[in-house]
Length: 139
Image (tube, rainbow, N blue to C red; front, side):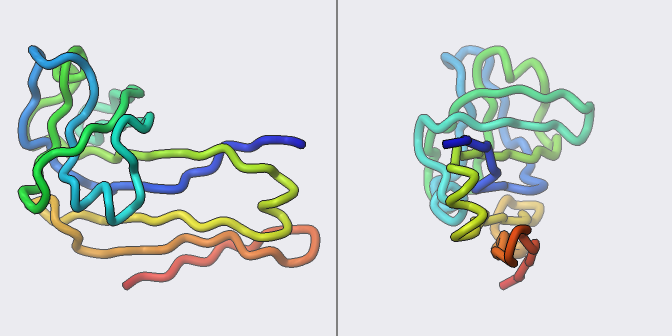
């Protein structure tokens, strides 16, 4: 059984609303955004800052729903500032043979300037014999 790591959730172009160096680690993410793409509290995420190219891994914690809050905490607060644009990605390990047989789906939110859902996408890997086709649908 060969395990592969695939993206299952992405928050694209969310904006930092606060950076709190005095909190113990993590990144606080609006609960509505987490729910929309399926990121769980305490799940590991990669964070990419599009303003300066810095990239780090941390874990997600839920912020207040509907407020659009995105707050890197602890040392990560030194890697960004309010207004910076981030990409937050969560992955899952899947059995390669199962993906080839059953496919895979990732959920993506493209955020507006207030960190609300501007566009929702499902990105799918569709089995086609011995390969996978990539399909993306926007809602």
